[in-house]
Image 1 (tube, rainbow, N blue to C red):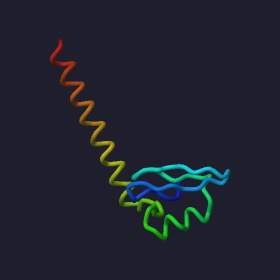
Image 2 (cartoon, one colour; image 1 turned 180 degrees about the vertical axis):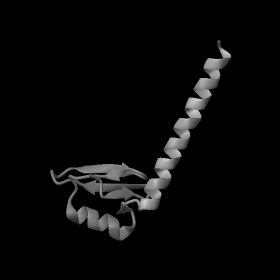
Image 3 (cartoon, rainbow, N blue to C red; image 1 turned 90 degrees about the vertical axis):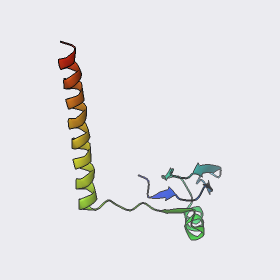
Image 4 (cartoon, rainbow, N blue to C red; image 1 turned 45 degrees about the vertical axis):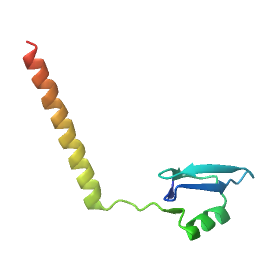
Length: 84
């Protein structure tokens, strides 16, 4: 599971197998990178810890998804009624 996200334009992180990976803004940083590389990128502000969503944020996301699903169903029902 990703514990960090790239916040800079790009970051080059060393992997535990000795290679390097280029990651770009918004990319999730998963397993396989060196601890020193992660610490260095954190210190430079190129990556940051992924914050766990609060209960309110989870509820808001669920409500938004339900609202979107209802809107899509209403639109599909309208199209179906108009084509009869």
